[in-house]
Structures are given as C-alpha cells and as structure tokens.
Image (tube, rainbow, N blue to C red):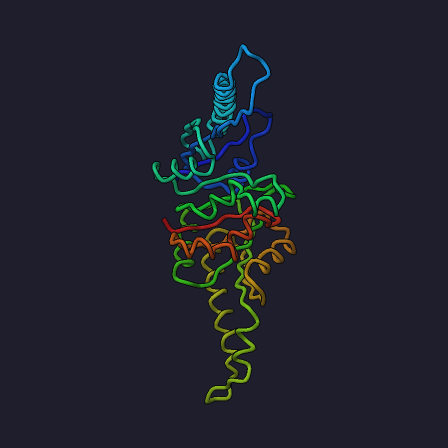
Length: 298
C-alpha cells in the first residue's frame, strides 16, 4: 500500500508522531513516501545591503532542503533496517503550500493513505486559518490519518464509527483488507440523534411493537454485524449503540476507553459534501483526544 507521510520536521532524535502511529497500526507491505514541503518565505526586509531579500529566501530554502533530506534519509534507513512493515521508502522535498503540495503528490502517485501530524495551533486558530491537517482531511481523495501523541504504550485501542451506509461498509471492508497488525481492541459505535426515536415513540405496528424499539434493535443488529467482521482484525471487538451526535459520541467513547485511534468513514468530493463533512470527521480531525483515521474509498 502506498502511503504519503508529511514530515514537518527537519531534525530530531525521535521519528515524527505521524510515523510512530503508522508503525503502531502495523499495516504490512508499505511503500512510504516521506515528503517535506518548504512553504514560501515572506521577507519584509533584510538588515544588510549585502544580501538581498531574494538571496535570503534562496539561502533559507537551500538550507531547509538540505536539513530535511538528511533527516528523512535517516528516518528511511531506520525503517528499512527494522524490516517489519515497510518495503520501500522514497524521500521528497517539495516547494509550495504544504496542504496543496501533499494533496497533488498523493493524486499523482497512487497514494492510498496520507498521514500528517495535527496542527499545534489552538482549535480556534485551526478553524479560522485552516491547518494542514484540516485542509487535507477536507479535500483529500484518499484516506487520511491525523496523528496525535499516544497516552499509553502497547497495542492500539480503536473506536470505529459507522452509519451503516453502503459507502461506510465498503470503507470498512477496505480497512480490514489492509490487515493492521497492531490493534488490541476495537469498539464499534453507531451514534444516532435521540430525535429519531422520539419521532417514532408513539408509533406501534400491527403486532403492537414500538417503532422506536424496532429502530433501536435494527441498529444494534447492524452494529453487531460490523463488529463480527472486524474480529478478523482483533478478537476483542465489541459493539455499542449510543444516542447523540456522531462526533460527540465517538469523542466520549474514545475518552472512556482510552482509545489511541478513532476510525470514521467520510465520503464526498462535491463542494456540498466537503462543506458538510465537518459534522463528524472534520470535527474529530481538529479536536479529537487521539489520532483519527478518516477512511475513503478511492
């Protein structure tokens, strides 16, 4: 599987969080592309007459490029030496707006998954200015993994949300096909607004069966069916049906179970679908308590 990893750093002792969470998930047979994007440097003025602003920009770009290449080469050697899940590593230094360049690279290179670290900006800043993670989550044609630091070691605890749509089922089957090896447990969650049950509370069928109970039972059966499929990844897979907005419910379950990753399915590349995506996956990408994997069928 081709995975693009955005590398913001140009130095360090430890690998970036994006690579650490990817390694912890344990997808086998990865072909990684490590990419560092040099964003345009705006120079308001330079304090000497010897070096022009243009020269300062070139000097900064060349030094950042050299540092990034050296850092990514070190990361590449470490991953290939480990020899567990990575088969091949490419390193790239790109110039331009980070989100745009990463998305363009992914579209041009048969990328299946884009991995980036979450912005260090506050939630309000990310919402107003648009972080790289937010932009990629909103616009990628590929699945996106937003990496955050883990709170504990060992295998991963995962919360997976589904609305049981055909698209969600397809995404989940693809996720199963990726064969992640580093997952300890999965909590499969279906969340629905309580207005759905309230609207059917007074309805009864010919046999006196409550329509609200029938809806709840149908959702429970479908959620249990998805959990059964995901036992191929982890035998410790359970199903939960909760009342509330999907984003809030998934966030709460993740906090209660000390989850390392929330997995959600998001479709759509029309303008309207991208604008409304924020209700669940985009909201979680911005302020979830853990890493978020947004699955897309591509």
